[in-house]
Structures are given as C-alpha cells and as structure tokens.
Length: 411
Ligand code: NAP
Image (cartoon, rainbow, N blue to C red):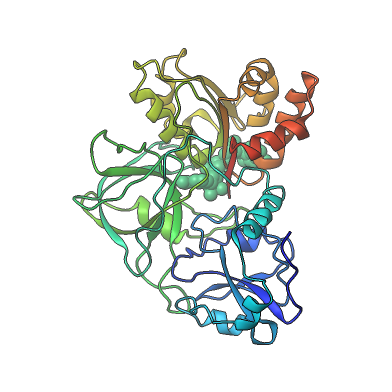
C-alpha cells in the first residue's frame, strides 16, 4: 500500500503541450469535465481532476500521462497551463520525499488498472505485439513527406469522397506498425491566427510500406463537407489532403499509438469490426497477413465492415478479390436500395457461431474502429453471442481487456 498524500501535497495531472496533438479525446473522455482547452493548449483543472486516469489509455500520444508533485497551494492553474509551450521542470520538494510520498511505479500501475475498467477496451497491447516507436517527430520537429499517390476509393457518383493517399519519407526513418496513426499539420492558420493543430489519421498500410520494401505509408481520408449533424462544414485537413497532387509535400508528426497493435505470434486470429474510414487499420492488418499468406503463419481473419452502400465502402473492389479461405468478410450496408438497414452489430449476432469459436481461442484479438456510436452496439452484440453459449460476458470482457485482446479506436 502507498501512504496517502499529506493534504498539502498534490500529484498534479498535466498534459505535455509539445507532444499533444489537440485531438480532444481527453476532454471527451474525462468523466468530471476537468479538461479544457483554448486555441493554444489542452489543460487539466487541478481543482476538478480526481486522478481517475480514465483519460490516459485513450490518449494516442501519451502526452496526457504527465504528473508533478507540487504543494497544493502552488498548483499550476489553468491559466498558467494555457500559456505553456513546454512542461515546467520538476520542482524539488523535500517535504514530499520526507513524507515518503514520491510517485512510484506501482502507484501508477494500480491507477492504470483501475482506469482500464472505465473504458471498453484494453490499455495494453497484445502480449506478442512488436515494439512501437512513438513521438519521433513533433510539432517542433515535423517530418516532410512527399505525396506519391492520391486517388478516390469510393464510387464517384456517391457523397462519400474517400481518398487513399500514399506518403513517402525518402531516406529518413519513419518506423510504423499496423494500428498506429500519424498527425498531419495542415498549412495556414485558424480564425484566431494560430497555426492549425494536427489531425490524426490511422495507417492503412502495413509496417513494411504501402509498397512492400518502400519507405512509404498510406492513409484513408474522407473529405469532410458536413458535421455529424448534417450541417455544412469544411474539414480543414481532410480537404487539404484530398486535394493534394503527386509530388506535393506534407508536414507529418508521430507515429502515435502503443496499444491498438496486432499480435505478432504465429496463428493469431483477428476479429476486425469497422465502419467507413475506420477500415484503415483493418486494411493494414489484413495486408500484413496477405503478404505472408504462403508462410503457414496466419491465423484466421474475420471482418465486419459497415458502410452506407457498396459504392461508399472504401476498397470494396480489392477487398472482394481476397480469397474466401483467407478472410471471412461480412458487409453491413445501411442504405443500400431495396435492402434492410444493417449495422455491424447485426451481423455479429447473425454470425454468432464462428464469432464464439474465435472468442474461445486465446490467440484471438478483437479490433473495433470507426464511429463512436458503434461502441455500445458492438459490446452488446459480443455480450449477446457470449451469453448464447452460457458464458458470462463480464468475465470474458475483463479477460480480453487484461490480456490486451480487445481494442477500440472510435471518434
Ligand atoms: P459513415 O459513412 O458515416 O458510416 C459508416 C457506416 O456506419 C454507415 O453504414 C452508418 O450507417 C453506420 N453507423 C452509423 N451509426 C452506427 C452505429 N451506432 N453503430 C454501427 N454502425 C453505425 O462513416 P465515416 O464518415 O466514414 O466515419 C468513420 C469514422 O471513423 C469517423 O468517425 C472517423 O473519424 C473514424 N476514424 C477514421 C480513421 C481514419 O484514419 N480516417 C481512423 C479511425 C477512425 P447510417 O446509414 O445509419 O449512417
């Protein structure tokens, strides 16, 4: 047991402004509304934060996981933090050391475990995941990439203008893994005259490149022309990216992400559940498996993919050409003329038997990516199919999280 902090001490939660990509995930996650932001920084209000850690696992960069021991009377205020360009140095606090309250690793680990139950997915990667590199390039030291491809992957007659964009890094290292993301710095300034903040995109290509052996990667980007409520809105970064031409250059930061990673051991199975552009990491993982299809190392792949119509489903053509004994594809189309509306969770229930079979194998990992709204529906569907077999979903759910086998990336 760790000794409780003396009342005059505070383990203050801070966000590193040099690494934060201002994606708003922490503010959305915080259950007590302790996180706020202005056009410069995301910050934590020390008067409200209760150290519950709910915001830590979802943060793609790890910038959220910073702590300083301070005297409560000298806590950094919201106003202090909003003006920061970097985190302050640790203060020496002899009082804290004398009282034996230094922040130690078990303390953090215990908090992280309890936080993992505040979110639906795991806060650790699968045991066999490869080592990810993160934050190699930051706002202050971005990498310049060259566009070597940009083409539309949805029907031209549809409203969903989704692009497959290939970026090349030339001679400079940019090591990535499937499931990681990068940040793009769009040029120009916002309404307050500040440089636009970075936007985050998942990789759509595997670790060895969009083209195997090349130092490049791909992204799946939907041109944003309206907000979630259907009101006209111009997506700054998505429009910038979709309009790029071959040989244009782009400022890139990252890579990010250390948990939504695929298992690296032979015969690991993947259940992939996605909607729309949430298919990006699923394409990366599937392509990793496809490239070693003849090695005998692959486990089973099962894909649940939701889109409005076939023509709005990115990569529909190439996906349907994959061999049926390589991947079990289940398409949930919600607005296809003459067909009932279907979501991925409906198909999970319909395919309960093979889903249960995979769930009973400890070599199976589950990945969910796409719209935030699908989280609850997918969890309910997994619970229903588990209960059909007489198992207790709450127990299996805990096991999947503890073993890093259930991962969510939703926005
Ligand atoms: P979308 O076209 O709006 O929707 C895709 C499908 O999901 C549609 O069939 C839609 O049905 C259905 N859907 C809506 N609500 C659902 C729910 N509660 N449960 C299950 N299915 C539901 O998708 P999108 O515009 O491509 O958005 C994809 C999301 O992925 C975005 O939020 C994006 O931020 C996120 N994402 C993108 C990336 C990337 O790298 N680009 C990476 C990770 C995540 P309806 O007909 O009912 O609308």
